[in-house]
Structure formats: C-alpha cells, structure tokens
Image (cartoon, rainbow, N blue to C red; front, side, top):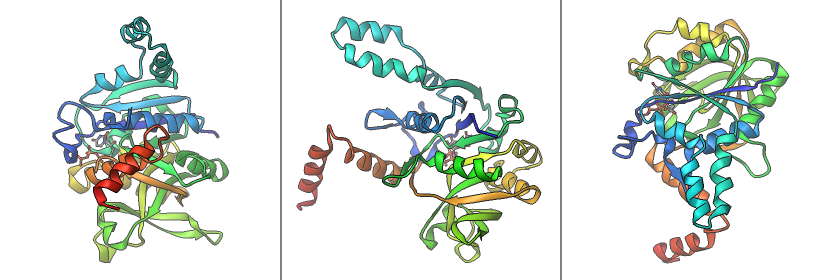
Length: 293
Ligand code: UTP
C-alpha cells in the first residue's frame, strides 16, 4: 500500500515559546520568510503526499489564511508593480488538499492524532509534527521519504529516530529494538519509553518527529489513557501497536530542528540563513564581526 495522506498536529499550547505563542501558533513562527508549517507541508508534498489534515487549536485562522488565496493581497501586489510576488503567495494555497480538524482541549499528541481517524479511515498515513523541521543530510532524500521507503518495503509502521548525547535522553521519547538483518540504522522496534531517566534509557535513539502508521494505531489510541504529564501520549499507543504487529525505527540521514524549543529555533534560523544565497554572505560577515573572527 502507498501512503497518500498525512496528519500534522499543530494544536499545542507552545508554552516554551511564550509570549510569542500567546495569540499565534508556534507552527506559524517564521524561519527567514516562511512559517515553520509551510516547510513541513512542503516536505510532505515533496514526498508524494496529496492530502493533508492539520490539527489546529488556537490561531486556527492564521493557519487557514496562510494556506488559502488572498485576492486583496494579490490585487495590492499587482497595483504596486510587484507581480513577481503574486505567484509566490498564490502557490502556497495549491500545495495540496489541506483539511482541518480542531482539537478543543489540549490533551496531548496522542489525542490530536486520534482526531484524524474519521479523515484517514483504514489507510496507512504519515504524521509530521508541525513544530519540527527536518533537514536531510547533503544528497539525501527528504526526511519523510526516507521513512516511506521503509514502509513501502516492509508494510509496517515506522518511526524516525536520531542519536542524541546520552545526557539528553530524558528530554525525548526513546526507542528500544534490535538491528534488522544486521543493519544498525533500521531496528525491529520492541518498545518506546517517554523521557526516561538517563540510567533507565534502553538506547540513545530519540523519536524525531516523523512517523508512518498503519490504521490500527487508532484502535491503540482508543485504549490509551492519560500518561506522562497527564497527556494522552502517542508513544503509549505505539507501545500497544508494537505488541500487536511489526514496527520499525529508522535512524535516518537527516537533522531535526524542534522549533518549539527556543535554542533549536535560533539554531534553525541561523542554519537556514547561512544556506540562503540572497543573505548568506551578509549574515556570515555579521557573525564574524560579532565574534571578532
Ligand atoms: P509539543 O509537546 O512539543 O507541543 O507537541 P506543546 O505542548 O505545544 O509544547 P510546550 O511544551 O507547551 O511548549 C509536539 C507537536 O504536537 C502538537 C504540537 O502543536 C506540536 O506540533 N500537539 C501537542 C497537539 O497538536 N496537541 C496537543 O494536545 C499537544
């Protein structure tokens, strides 16, 4: 089976980024001149996803407006001789079929994904965290494509992971498993542990914000009560799924930026600025002046 649908949860409260997130979802924070959520949706589209469900909360309107036509803005650009910008703002609305569902209460990531059941039905689907930008290593395929390749071959749910320094494991969901056919980067997944203490972490492989699931994850979510932090945890539902069918974890060739974390947001901004031809030289000079190098 191929995967055509993706679910993007973007309804969290973004408390780590207050006050910026008081009236705007963190998923709409810009990296240079594009909101984080647009990078995420462009990644999904580049991987062949045609149907996207965004789970929204507060700030729903800002998200919906961004991925819609804006005739007044287009008329203004035309009247002011800025036709070159019209296509850039209009094409955003044509990226994919984008649908929305509202999470009324922020009961956790698992709850947000459960809301997608009616839309997804019995198809396999991808999940891309709306606050996480994935940058593939040079020459590698987009993050989600690397996961879809595994799904298409093995037909089992698969989660992306990345290696983190051991002292950081308590910040992440960590996976346990054994290498598949001797491949250290592809695990037969046994279980997941949410934010384990350093001495109880089975590995240093942290969940990286992209997943592909068989539809049975929805049944598992129905049987998942509140877990760590009083939230319905996707990792708890994934543990139920791993008990029922084969699941995999892929240590992929990509870098993850969790922009809900202020430090990671600034890192991502600098990283992307230094890759943008139009501003990279000036930014580099500015940093050199600041650092007296
Ligand atoms: P996070 O746990 O990073 O988001 O969720 P948060 O709860 O907004 O973070 P803080 O700790 O308050 O800063 C990861 C992704 O899941 C979504 C978030 O929007 C983010 O994209 N999410 C989380 C939901 O859609 N609903 C929820 O109830 C929780």
